[in-house]
Length: 141
Image 1: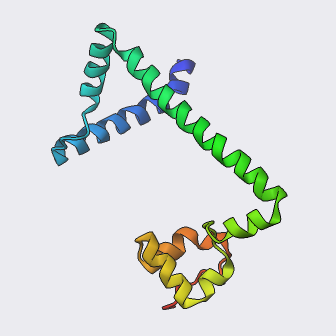
Image 2 (image 1 turned 180 degrees about the horizontal axis):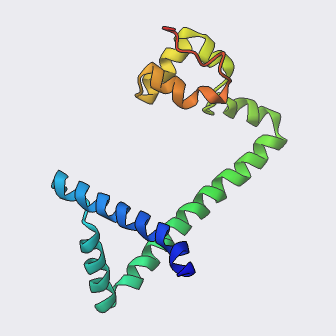
């Protein structure tokens, strides 16, 4: 009985999440997202025909290769920028960074808002914490 009390909240949460997932997919008539049952049957099918682990290996290979390529470029570049001032100054102009001044200057904020594709209030809500509350007030406020 004690074991059931420990496991029951997790089972209820899992059941609710699976139910919501299924309900949303069925109601939206999604052609992209499968129901939980289709995921289970698709997984069983891939395991039974022996292709599941090949797909997993291919996905892991892509993720690992992407990480290694990014690290092979970023680490030497970062070290080079840290050692050679002229390289840092040259590449600094191409770095995306947010500073307090970006939020205080209306022209700069408007450019960032436009580039983000968000409304101004959403942009400030999403990124304002980076520079502090005072600088993050919407311009219309």
